[in-house]
Length: 389
Figure 1 (cartoon, one colour):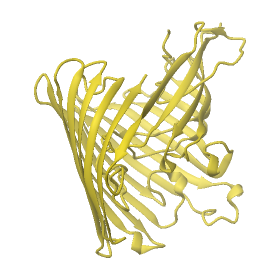
Figure 2 (cartoon, helix red, strand yellow):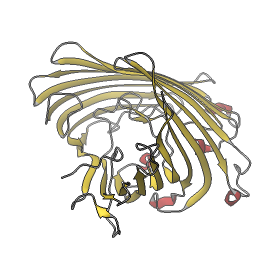
Figure 3 (tube, helix red, strand yellow):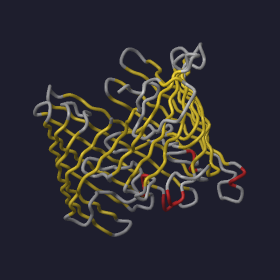
Figure 4 (cartoon, helix red, strand yellow):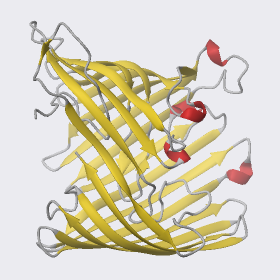
């Protein structure tokens, strides 16, 4: 089956529609991401979380995730004028409200994109519709440190010579209780990314600048006159990455439009090979959140995650992930949590990113939440599969 070469199709679903364009081939491209399995709980909580955490799965995602998946179909077209097109639709299901779904199936993509539209910019992609948008991620804690999934339009990969530019104007989708099935919420964003800036032979830099605002549809809302912005840099070097992000009236998205909120994130992650069979992945992050309207919510989240891996052969591997997270409130309350997961894996290849993968795992951990005066322990054993395709 021919792969979609126009855009990287992260976790997703799409359907073909009739078109006067010539079909690029006679088949659909099916791509996506999913993980499903059983988790037997023998403790206070199935998962390990710390109250008030800012850095997503701050004690680590291995053996500490919800079930769910994103399933996409796409159809390619080629025009007689030399343009190339994709029509894409994606459905998803997540068994978690913090992933934008209450357990239902949700429509998260429905867009069309064209390439080779401008002869002077043959690699620039112009798109419009609903899409995953500007969602850079750190893997070990499963954190989208920016996330502007939305509907609107823009372009990607405008070649400026020495750098490429992405730019878009998008509107937040009004979710409601049923997921991303509404229209514009009244919150809008201008997003930009200047990327692939080469710094020598082994380093590159990406720069982000975003601006959020409301339309007249927000009249009467607390945020009607609020604007937000984000600035961020992402430095990649020799398999490592350092991220610095500042948000004003926002945290992860300028759609927040939260008056008086500021957030500063510094994150470092990467991986190192120890031998032909052994490697270690790691992440350390700090994020400070301040809320002018409620100083009791002012806090910092520190977390560190280490995941050593060993491949016994090109099928079987063993992973151990250990994580520790502290949420330190300005009023002297402090929450903390730790987690260790042992996972025995079978996969399609020996590299840590090879999928599909079957996992048989055990997770142990504890969360000590001083703000709620609770101490929660976790012991969970499970079996699951994970794949992206």
